[in-house]
Image (tube, rainbow over all chains, first blue to last red; front, side):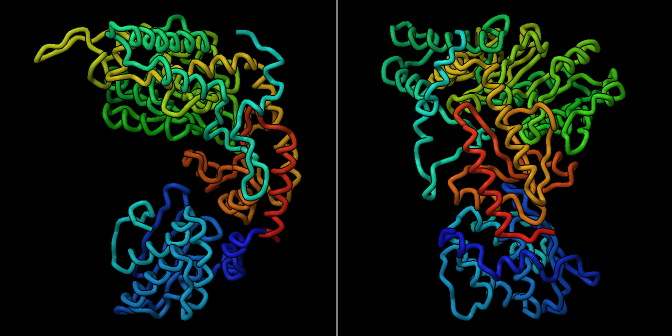
Length: 151
Length: 413
């Protein structure tokens, strides 16, 4: 296997793909948003229970490639307990990781997605769940779509 | 132009693009249902046209324009012969299948459909033979109805036709060969059933035109749409066949130069088909290349191509069926030159990424068939599609690559 491909499919990603965390709708959710990736058909729903400005609970559901599923799973573990502005800051860093391949030291498991940058077509797979989560946070009723964002 | 066995010898030499390595492996191009590669003869025809003959067609009184017009109208006659239309005026050049279907939906649709009418489609239609009809329905108040697919075997449920072909149905549009299932539909039978009730038929021939004989008179359709780039020709050119009587009664769908017989400040009069439907400077250069691909395919013989591609697809199907956790959709018996499948626990896009690593070009996703996918309970499949230059050893490469992918992602649910 090439270095690019083993960088893309890191163990952390394979593990989250095989055993997704926080999958399924939370019954107590008070916010949700749907995301579509029209070019490949990936779908993602993100459910939040917002407690004031803080994400008390978060889950996802959907279908897609290993990258998109692992990204959604890992995202839920990272966003739980964060405020809206902390979540936005985290997405900014995540976006930089997947588009540049630069791995900041303090990013824990999110750094596993650095390999995505070598596969430009897969960047939107990694960011779909984040777009949906941010829409849910902002109470944006329109479905998130990777086509309307500059990834 | 009759088939010759010599045309098949060293056929890969006709396609220089195949002679390259991708990620360190010889390219195995199995994405032919998306677009086929182009032989030297077609590329040369295009090259020769622009190097020697290029000039705007029609109305021109100088030598180059006359030559260009002759070549353009010659390509129309060539396409007419290729699909056995009655006259060249029944061939309208378009950008491809999608534009051809949109032309019928936008022109024939509003002139013939009204509230209460029904457009009958099938559950296996590509978005290009579905969305234009949704638009026509919205515009006219007609409604859509669907002929079901039998399930994973992917055949049309012909037993439902009696129930669905009611007097409200004004148009029946269906694909010749499914781009996802590989099903070859009984198009002549469907047309005969529709014709008895005076229902207009539209066939999406995108996946059949380059792979098998397509004879519009034997099929008995009213319209037939196809693209050049899926039949060894270039992108940006395709055609609509329409029965002359229907075309003559249809209004233009775009206005501009070349399609009028006279223009006044308040109104204009239209030329007959095909000019009526070809407003503006047509794509004559690519039409010449389309004519060249008709010659190329007829030298190979379209019965032979059908056998070649179908044999490869069936062999791929049988060998892939031995893999653990695989679900193969489409007919068990005869099929067009493609096979679609899904692995339990591994998404199609991951499979395609891994295959690319082995130099194999596949396609993964919904294949512009989202309603069908929903119907089958799938979100995506992997598709391997074959053409005249593919060989059995490429099936070996495909199966070996799939085994490596399963091993990497396994154990599967």
